[in-house]
Image (cartoon, rainbow, N blue to C red; front, side, top):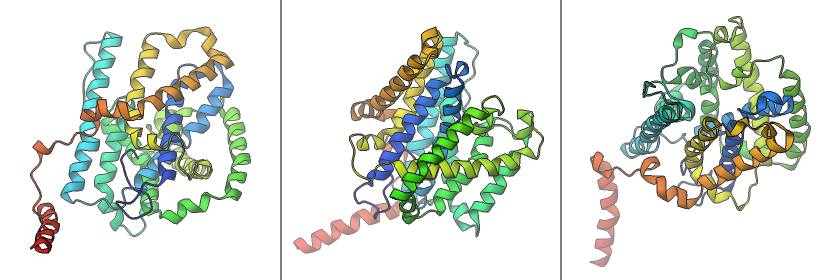
Length: 362
């Protein structure tokens, strides 16, 4: 999702603006959704919009993550990149968020546990597990039905518990597997004028359904972090909701992709910094909540909600910029050359071009 994964063009070629645009726009929606959480309770309209956004923004991210994980194998250089780009940021930010919570809530006993992801860090944990499972998932004859079956079973198994946020890992797995199964032409299928036109009434209908469902549906279903029994529903509701939400999420994700620009935009370059925007904006949102900034009554009115939305978009945009990346690269993309031995095959690959150049010069 976050890393400089390449476009459908050959690896090493120019990045595809579509995917960088999609990642940037999705991270903006993530930040807006988190900013809406403290103020949406007083507004049925905002709650409905929140529900619609939550039905597709993470599925869109995860599908892109799966698409760019297709080439992942256990090659040493890719394992190192997984460790430095996913595992290390998870450790750093899980610790940082826990300490942040201790400071603002004045709860020195709040545990720092790498087994219990807090707030935003669950996605890094999930991405690590999904990537490690990718070689196995690619071996399965029908990986998507398999992943849906796993998600359905997880939705009726409350005993899974909170370790590693395993419910989310399993219930969101079908979206990652779908990305693994997709090809570049599948994205091109929705990037047409006809689909863009059709997506307008689809989103309008989704917003109407979201508004209608506010007093009738538990929005926790959209988080995929609980079994049906934990949400006070009968066990059979879990598999039904997994399939229903998978269908709805795919429909809205396709509509979202249809409206993502295909050309270079002013924000295209920010798509390479979505990891920074994702992990850092949580500190701003939590600080605002801890300091009571969302408690002002005027923020719970339409103009206040619009202002919060715009500020969330502006903050996460700033956090995706190059200067911010340079400052925080030590935590999010450390090289850590000191920690790894050079792989013999990698050394050989580097030696071959050098030897060829020497022969030419000779």
